[in-house]
Each structure stands twice: as C-alpha cells, then as structure tokens.
Length: 102
Image 1 (cartoon, rainbow, N blue to C red):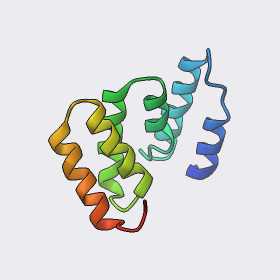
Image 2: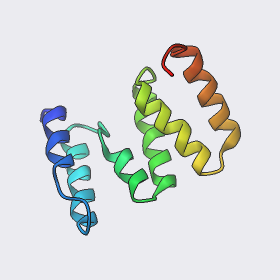
Image 3: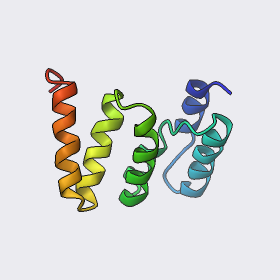
C-alpha cells in the first residue's frame, strides 16, 4: 500500500475509451491507501466532472492545506462550479500562503 506507487500505476492505466476502468483503478487506490485521493481529482476534472472533482478536492484538501497544486485545483473547481465567493477566498488564501509561486 504505497500511495506513490499505486498512483503511478493508476496514471499509467489508459484513459481514452477506458474511463470506467480508469475510475475503478482510482477508487481502488483510494480504498487501499485509506482515502488518499492522489490523481483522482485531476482525472475527474479531465473528464468534465467538475462538481465531483470539487468534492474530492475539498475532502483531500482539508487533509493537506499546504499542497499547492491540490489547492489550485480546488480554487479552479470552485470557480468552474459557480462557487465564486468560495473560489475568491481560496485564491486569496493561495496568494497568502504562496506569494512567490506565480
């Protein structure tokens, strides 16, 4: 149950035309790692499931508020799902925590 190794195996699973198997691989990784989301939110974003991605990023972002790319994805998904006030707050927090990142 090594999260990095499981994540690598998941992202090597072909995605195009293989959505169901790829999502099953993500869910199996989450089950085996005790809930670590890894690349699953990004997969959800890529297939247009923005609400699901936002929920997953909320769940995993709470566990690691210092994870820059997770938090950027969370702000993007809040914006994409019309949660603009929350997206503004999330973006302001990103700028506060990582002022030299962009």
